[in-house]
Amino acid sequence: MLARAGKLRDAPDMVRSIDPDFDVEYLGSLARSQKVDTAAAIERVVASAAGMAAQGMPRAIEAVDPIGAVQEIARALNVPISAMRDQQEVQERVQKLDAQEAAAMEAQQAQMAGEAAQTVAEAEGMVNEGQGTGPGTLPAGA
Image: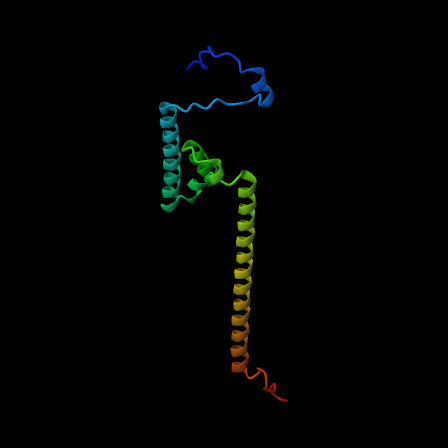
């Protein structure tokens, strides 16, 4: 309230020289309660979006950044930084998972294409056998 009223003095030069955009974090019971409310609100939004997606509105989940939500909840609940992965490691892990999913999708598509080709070949073989022009038969008049 004092900061909003402009009644706080400027930060000391030493603090501003280290980080001119430093942020004051209040640790009192009211501040902790507000952070818990923030975490609960994020959880409600994520659950609501997931519920809407499950009910046939899949685009609702696109409004939520799941990694950002988890990070905000962790920050609001004062989860130690050491318990969370840094942004770069999260990004690397997501890229690795995306690559694995893409490779699995390609393998599945290749398998399906192979099965389809085999089915076509078998069908052509049956047609050819029915016409007497399959492998091992001579065309009529030969």
